[in-house]
Length: 102
Image (cartoon, rainbow, N blue to C red; front, side, top):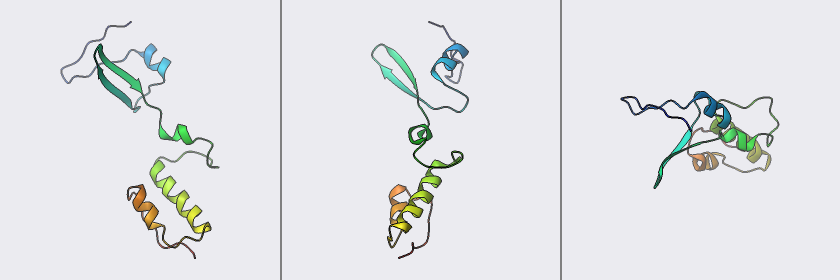
């Protein structure tokens, strides 16, 4: 167990040994939960880790939403769907594309 100090902005420093053990790096996301026994911090894995290997690409993109929208556009155009924008809207409108080939 480690003891850490909370600064005036409510931040605390997770000791390096713990960060390394659980894989928390600069920019990582973590879930913070209030439990009966106290505060629980759980590291979150990037979405890209979940889908690693599912697509044949040389490297993972910076914007996974944009990548997913483009991959689905290509997939839908091969399936001869008429309007890919319906799917993009379903994804949350992160990108827009024209009509797919019929």
